[in-house]
Length: 336
Image (cartoon, one colour):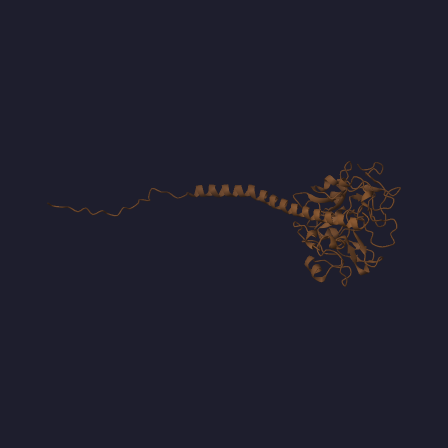
């Protein structure tokens, strides 16, 4: 019998029938990815800022708790925004509300800085050399360091926590919580402007520096070149009344970031400009955080707080002994 042997050859695969992406297909894929990125990145950015805003809101809640504890130990009064160490002059430095609250916050200085503050927090007017260098600030008295948080993103309402900075201010007082009716509708604290140009100024003996120790206010006065001041009672109308700040006036007084000469002709804030300029206007997705006198916190747009029919900066100047009413810009109608 004759046998035949068949040798099997190795099987080869034919790839010639398979095709890669064409240039057009690649361009379409890239365009789709770019479109999705353009849609999703702003969403992620807003979500990240919302998280930072929540952390900032939590900071303010902790400060509200610390202030409530302070009141229990001090006859139910709020502290001054700041006072002088020696009682009558700033030459020995300031004691700021953040310094006063140190024992009530376990000396946690981090809560005084908002995560969204591009400046990392403003240093005190009299700051330690390292702090001054880091923020590029000058200092009033280089040999002095204020009793203040080394970095600060928050600012108090002047009608509740005034500039009762020295002893010879008989018309100014610290405010008792009982003096504030409707405390849930009166701002106690908000976020500080992170543009140092908005915090500059000139004081009689202290010279020019960043005034991070000062309070802010929604109260102005309708005479050009006049600002309401809790310290001197200047800028008040007949009978010692304050005039509320309109939204338009506020937006005109808030210096742009970066500084825009076309928007505001003054190189630095001065005594003639309303102190709303010390506040921030849109840190968290066009809103900022507020702590109210009853301890609750809320994110709002600045212009919402300046509605004369729902004015949230106070119905009275509580820090003035006579508690003058705050009126609308007509000087006759009380704010609502």
